[in-house]
Image (cartoon, rainbow, N blue to C red; front, side, top):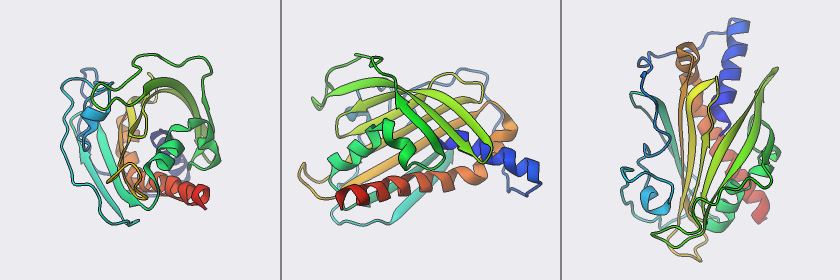
Length: 240
């Protein structure tokens, strides 16, 4: 939820210092409104989330059988926004990892570039009490984040959709900086009592400024990796 803001901040600093940043051409901004949901192709995301649109795509993947901390990364471009993904199998219970991700109030303690984080008290949205497919508890909250890089700071609000032990999705509310910003964490494990969990993190973003969008591509994948690494380190601290 913090990386697009931090990328824009680092781009500003780079421009001011004259530092060279590699860029690639990005598609022209699409004038049509960018959909807020339903563009991820995550394993079983549709069945986990009560908030996805009916057209959301999903595919099945085999459950991990061995614990490993090696990361696999991917990036792709849709006609409307950039999508970055990170996949990692961690030697920690799914519930522990899920609790770390859904505890937005504590992001400021360990998430890179996050200066302040808070869930708005009393503003939980009772959209759905249970997930229709899994029977898991589901809820939505509003969260405020302040992110920064050196002297540049930005604050924005996200709607956070939570499916207990399975999914955390944060979608930023309208902001002048970007046309779209959404992150998804999906958690799968071989069994409920397993000591390992496969985590898939996806980031989709589209800056309002094509200049920022082009420059940010050089740093967004690195930031996605840093984000997953920060949560992995947090899990190690809490489990130790």
